[in-house]
Length: 448
Image 1 (tube, rainbow, N blue to C red):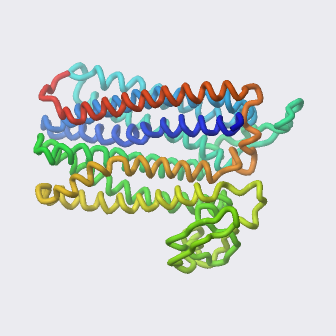
Image 2: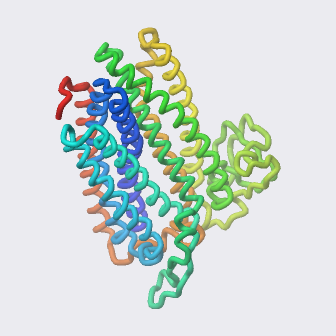
């Protein structure tokens, strides 16, 4: 273990833990806003109670998400100081916009929403959570545009750096519009945020199913289940569609990642897709390839069944990402995506037909399915970030050249252990609070 490996592990742990909270915030804010506008429209108190109940769970998740996100920025200046020197002029711009525009916007109006019950009009109160939902998604946009630039660096110019043994050049902003309209960032934004909507939908469905099985507040939780199921089904379908567009963009901009995702070792025209594959990295081939559908990989990657996919063996050895991790992460993520479509479709059917009582086994599945979109999201990020290696900025800056030269192994070990213990504790607190208030159910108090 060296500084580079431990710094990568530390960032993986902290960013992965942070992303447990982000997708639920993105989706649940939208659902709560919808519920409160239904209350404004119908004046039915059940929508008010739904807004308060699901809003309470949203606030728990939102607070912990903010806490876990702060440490990520510190690591850019500490563990990854050389990276910050190299790309700070570009990478810092979208992060600064996110903080000054989106974060401040959601911070102000989350306060209005929390403390504004019975103090502002119903419409104003509904607008406050709507603005929060907009701002959280806007925040995700700028962060993902920054990440999209790392995947596909555009709008940059390189200038010489003197007296630095590791980095001889520095990337500077040449075209902000190119960075802000980068297709890699926008496709990642739509795919990631909509996957957050799936997380929220399965979260609401699962908790609602738990209460329906126990005959608690049946009208309340059946209505919550139905709206979440519809939201979830639409979102699942959109995730698949945006994932297809995103995959084609990866094929154009990151050919090594595409080859690793598909475990294609030799350059092929009209590459097929094998449903069962076991990559053998040591021998640079696949030990198992079963049930191959001819030309499907080329079709999915380029929209052309006869397109050429460059194999991993035709890339330099030092530019090939870890294949097995990338491949299996992507395959399991895709499998979970289609499984969630099936679950959401059944959920829509039974909720629209009001056939909950005859589907107890499915309701139990819905409860246990809460972690599925979380897992799919984590696997998606593993495929995206591991598949980009050995580049931290694809084709421009390698990860080994981005780590700080001014920290030692002991410092990284101490901070890694501290972050792991702290985040583990926060995870326990989060699960405890969400479980406690989820089981507690909606309060009979409509005010406060």
